[in-house]
Amino acid sequence: MNRNRILHPKGEWQYIGVPVRKEPRGTAISKIRVLDLQAAHQRIISQCQHYKNVAPHFDEVMEILEQVFRSTESDRLVDLNISSLKIVSEYLGLNFSYTRSSQEGFDYSKVTDAGEWALEISSQYGATHYINPVGGQNLFDPNKFKNRNLSLSFLVCPSFSYPSGHYKFEENLSIVEIS
Image 1 (cartoon, one colour):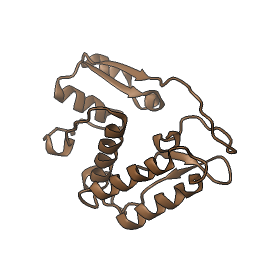
Image 2 (image 1 turned 90 degrees about the horizontal axis):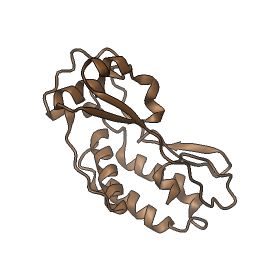
Image 3 (image 1 turned 180 degrees about the vertical axis):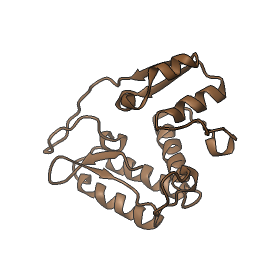
Image 4 (image 1 turned 60 degrees about the vertical axis):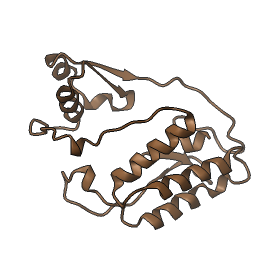
């Protein structure tokens, strides 16, 4: 949730995010709780209001955001993220299914850096290929994947632009922005 960028009303871009409760480093994502889900909801809605008279799909996007928060099952960040992925996938006509790694009983004892989570999960699932967005490429050691007979590749999204009204166009913003 904290990596969604939208245009700022005064130019450039801003993050839309959800404040979370402070937890010790290394706390499982499944244990992270949103500080105040209702306040986060209102903050994100407020951050998007400057689009009201300029975005052609403003009402649809606001309804998506409302659905995300309405359908979130708890104050856990993972539930908000799942809800977000589910609702946006439905809007785009994509199938969405998920598994919570916290419920899979994976062994993470070999994880020593951020790039190894995907390696361990992929290995324990018996995967043969792992694909990650190109922005995270520096996290991964290709040799570690090769040593486990896992292909590693990075998805580069095609560049595209769209009218942004009186705002300066910014690439790679959130799906919320593009709508």
